[in-house]
Image 1: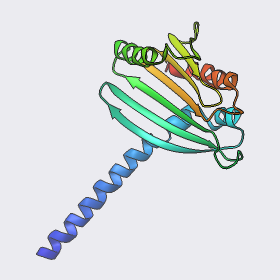
Image 2 (image 1 turned 60 degrees about the vertical axis):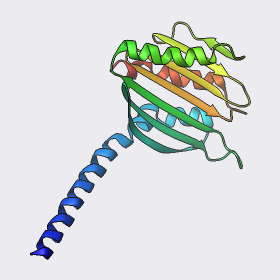
Image 3 (image 1 turned 180 degrees about the vertical axis):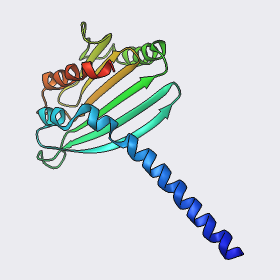
Image 4 (image 1 turned 90 degrees about the vertical axis):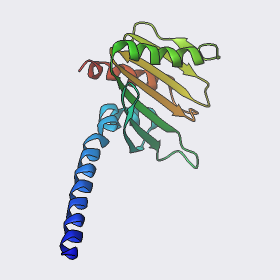
Length: 168
């Protein structure tokens, strides 16, 4: 009888673990697929990607993906991409304002009018490039670090290419 209970628990635990793994893998490619390897290669050259998965946050969900330049020496640039889906547009606006207000006094910060509902660019090349765009409840963040040899225009172009996807 004890053996039957142990075997039942093992199978039940296995099924739960399998279900959890399947649910996690369903979310794993969201950020990398959304950003695309094509965009990563336009910015970094030859690149490899690693998905950072999905995380529940206080007022929504966020997905991340990190791409690494694979042909740029010992300390290759990394591209960190995040997409956040807030529970409401007000929540998304407030989160955007927090980032804006913490960076707007620094050299290299600028608003980026006419892109999405609101957008900003912050660069301290050769250290980093950062672009953030909000459209409705969705916000994307693209950060490249270090940014030496990486075109800020390529980062901005990638952000613009994602705008149609942010509507769905």
